[in-house]
Amino acid sequence: MTEPGEPRFNYLYEDLFTLPAQAARFVRTYFLRIPDLRRPADDPRRDYSPRREANLVSWPLVELFAQEVLLMTDNRVATLKELGDKLANYTRRQGGKRFFRQFFTVQRSDHFLTLLNKTNIDYTRYTGGKETLFNLDSFLTLFMEGDEMLRSDWRLIRDLVLIRMVEQLRDWIAENADAVPGEEEVTMAEQV
Image 1: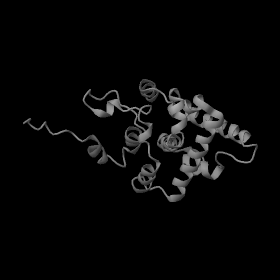
Image 2 (image 1 turned 90 degrees about the vertical axis):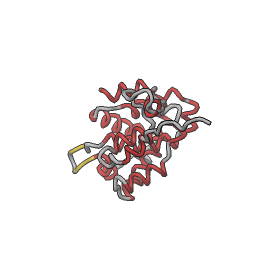
Image 3 (image 1 turned 45 degrees about the vertical axis):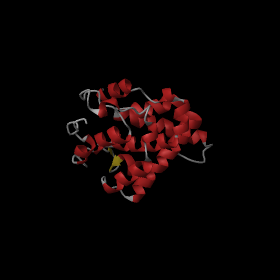
C-alpha cells in the first residue's frame, strides 16, 4: 500500500479569490491557456498551450464569466460574440494566419486600434460593402470609455473576442496550427 502524496495546491481555486481584480490574467491563463513561463516547474500553468489546448476554449463558459464575474450586460456580451464571429469568418476567408497571429499577440494600444481599423476596412471590402465588422456604437461599447478614451482593459476585451474566434476556428486552427503563436512568442509579446 502506498502512502497518499502530499496535498496539492489548487491554483485555479486560489486564483478565483483574485477576481474580478485579476480578471485579465485569469482569462489569459485559464480560458486562453497562455502559459506563464516564470512559474516554477511544478506549476501546471507553466505548461499551458493555446496551440495544444485549443479544444478547451469554451465560449459558453466565458459568456457566463463575463456576465457573472465581470458584470457585463447581455448586450455587451452579444456584441463581443458578434465581433468574434465576424473576425473568425474574416480570418478563415480573408485575413488568414498573419491576421490571427497579429490579433493574438498585439500589445500596444495604438497597434491594436490600427489593426482593428484596417481590418474593418478590409472586412467591408470583403463583404462588398454590405457589412462592417463593427459600427461606431459597437466599437464604443466594447473598447472605449466615453468618446475619446480607450478602455484600460482593452486587452481583456480583445482576449474575450479571441476566445470566441478560437472556438469558431477550431477546424481551421487544426489545419493551420502555426497560426497560433507558440508559447515563447506569446510570452515575449506580453513582456513588450
